[in-house]
Amino acid sequence: MPLHHFFDPVRFGSEFIYTVIIVFLCFLIYYKTKEMYDLTKHKGIHYFRNTFLFFGLAYISRFILHLLSIANVTLDIYLPRKVFLPIIMLPVGYLSTMALFYLTYSLVWRKIKNKYFLIFSNITAILFSIVAFVTNSPCIISILQLILLIFTIIITFTIFIKRKRVSQTRILYLLIIIFWITNLIVLSPRRFFIFEAKILFQVLSVAIFILIYYKVVKWIK
Image 1 (cartoon, helix red, strand yellow):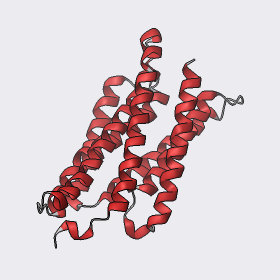
Image 2 (tube, rainbow, N blue to C red; image 1 turned 90 degrees about the vertical axis):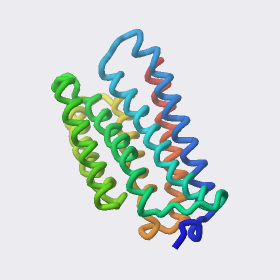
Image 3 (cartoon, one colour; image 1 turned 90 degrees about the horizontal axis):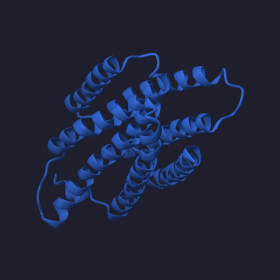
């Protein structure tokens, strides 16, 4: 059955607004931290910046899927979902997984050599994408990234548990983790959450990301 039979302009509109806001904030954070990195050459900041670069690119790639859905309606082109969905999942899976790896590595870069990180993270991200492509299931990416996110949470708390003082960096990383969890919920299949619930999580996700941006700006001053 043609994909445009399932097109919902309200869902598309909410997805478009959500994507624009998240991508804009991702690249704004990436830009705002550039001067700080240029001045300090701090590797942790470099990997932290790349988290938002890759995440922004992942959202752009994901939104292409929705644009292809629109093409079915406006251009009357039949693009089978079974064809373009797995193809789109390749860059989305790779970029979003790399973003999560960069977030983790920004915490542990002193303990792991850069070369080993690049090799391991790229191989893992590619494998995640291939698994999603072969299974034709976006849920696989979410499950695998959730496992990786749990690993990141453990590392974060292990590092910060020794620091009794509540620092801006600690709050910032905790906010990013909370955002990532809500983001996985937002990206979950429709059958798991009603549309109204997803809108609520999108609003919550945007609010958290705005707070992240505020904390980043405060952090770099």
